[in-house]
Length: 471
Image 1: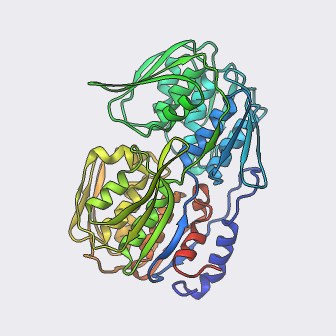
Image 2 (image 1 turned 30 degrees about the vertical axis):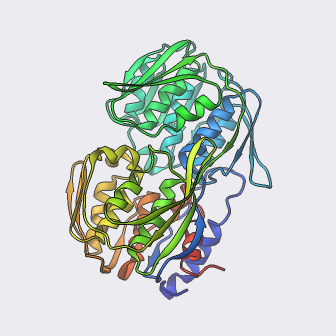
Image 3 (image 1 turned 45 degrees about the horizontal axis):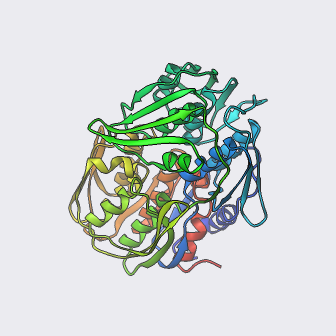
């Protein structure tokens, strides 16, 4: 396998095999750190499909578990984060099984029917699972303890605790509003009208989930629109939900106590996962790839908009609708990128894609400025500081701001590389720096790529396929 040091060949092979197939979920595991050296592997060519959208997969499992009857989910992401959601819903009474054909079958307990789990709910690295399930539990008469790995346990939950406490839930958290924490739900909960102080689809969704089993109308006002998968899917399951555009922002109201109908759900490909290939193909000369079945929900495509502003050659092929979501195949060819000032209003639609956008900026001509992304400080890692340190170690000039970063690019040339960088247990940092390594003169050593399995179990298999090194 050209492009990898000899002493990492076996590690890469083992990792690709381990991440090639997700089995039926069992207890969450915490693998030993898996370091990896990455260097340039030549042009990316060919066609791949990315795994199912993580945000939609989480919600599909939760909402199907609250419906009365049998739902089927096609294309579910089988990464560790989503498997944590499946395990939690099983612990609260839902029957969830993966069939041999890859279709997931869920028999729900109905809104209001969640059972008391016998043990703590282990969330692994999944902040989405934790925050949404906290909302779900808050309006049910059960008590749940949430635990997670070291990364998740360092992430603040206060922005979810505040509105759920207003609805009547009793939440006891570790110092700093962190995990482990305990949620004592209340039934009936109190409907509220809540204006989001920070744009967050997770907080919005947590409140809406609590509102499902709350008599009356629960309202969330978001001054800046965030991803709307919850609204789309809840409506599809039969919830009475309205969305109104006002001068104050989007006003989303849900009427409890809801009765959800089972659904057959097709999960489109994850635009956050596709972002790594959009950037990789853009920066590696000679690349020409097609990423199939990418979800293009308008609240999720900020990365496509930003890359096109930089000059990326991204073409939509065969636009269509899958499971109520807009989808297309994306053809991406190498192009000279030019620095931009990233519009701050793109942040909610690409918050998870900033790390790989920073990598794209490292190869552009000029200085890219990205501001307005405070949320990056409280993701799986502090993604601003972590990416600055990693890119600087690879020879890229960066300036860190409280809400973003300025990156001076190489003008299309390879960056120096030759550094060991820390992923900080953050899957998107690890994958972003793999992409950076593909355009480096010297190997980029990532201290731990095992977190990649949380969202993209077949990432390395896809990389092998696009660089002509697959089986």
